[in-house]
Length: 339
Ligand code: NAD
Ligand code: WQD
Image (cartoon, rainbow, N blue to C red; front, top):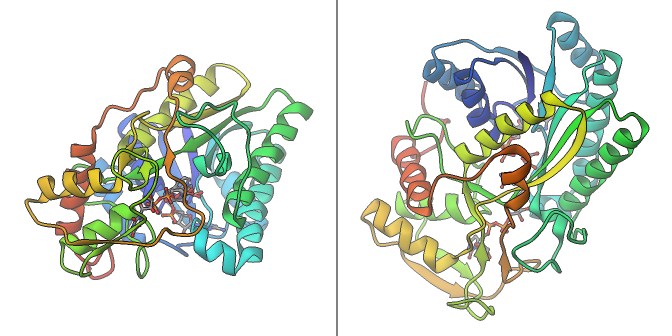
């Protein structure tokens, strides 16, 4: 089965492409490399010992996209392409709506034209906003408090409308919690530009000596140790969730909306401790003020993922730290400096 993976050179996309190839799927990637490197694709090919078809193109470019569908018999699409920084989305909201919503509309149009109706979309736990009570069920009320989150909500709604208008579509809306870690080889991983916003890459860069200490945003939350609690999930579990979703969607048309999380909440201090034990290093940190927009606790109810697509997360926090650390030590500067 030939799968188009938009954003396949990126962090989650690259791990999912590798998992797809290992499961025997054929992979076509469309990525404009605005937040990734061609090096990740080369490494996927080495790890899988197979090649992928790569188009360096913007998903909003309908002429290129149409060409991809003309040249390949695409049977299903996994749509990762998009911009993902909450902070950046507040400063340049139009770019976020244009890229995330615009690319999705272009893609869904071309898919309709080619009668390709199996789609898995990267949504996010961010669509639950700041009021949902953890463990969060898929039926919880939705809201978003930044342009990035609103762009994800808009695309979810577009997909709902699309399915209502034509129930022969097979649509998966996967809401990831906090994807972290890397493939166990340490050859592919997360490679953020500039100063990382997210906790895991920040801790990794402190451990490897690129940054001095972790600033912990808030020590006075109503959690077991006062620091924020999240549902960190190994990126290879996320990749596997896409394969399970594809399998379920392939069987019947439906609109599937599911959380991809472990169901466990860990605090910032828990993560730092686990990372110290994985790396054997002391991670310096300082508790500073809360970060605007953060909430105390956010973790998934995973029952629906388990019952509907037979998927359960299998990696624990220790493996997430171990694999993130291996990627960081083998690639202290990400993909950038290696030929
Ligand atoms: P990423 O930035 O590493 O990957 C996204 C990829 O899409 C990049 O390779 C980028 O170059 C590409 N891209 C962006 N806009 C494009 C466009 N218009 N045309 C073609 N390519 C384009 O991000 P990621 O962490 O791998 O996230 C993948 C998806 O999952 C995103 O949609 C993101 O919003 C969503 N998501 C991520 C997280 C997370 O914490 N990483 C959590 C929830 C949801
Ligand atoms: C985790 C915890 C921080 C950095 C974000 C997006 C969300 C989704 C996943 C895309 C929080 C604390 C962090 C640091 C810290 N992405 N922290 N010091 O905010 O849960 O989710 O990524 O869809 O939409 O908002 O993840 O890794 O930024 O933060 O103390 O330097 O670590 O306060 O408690 P978050 P995160």
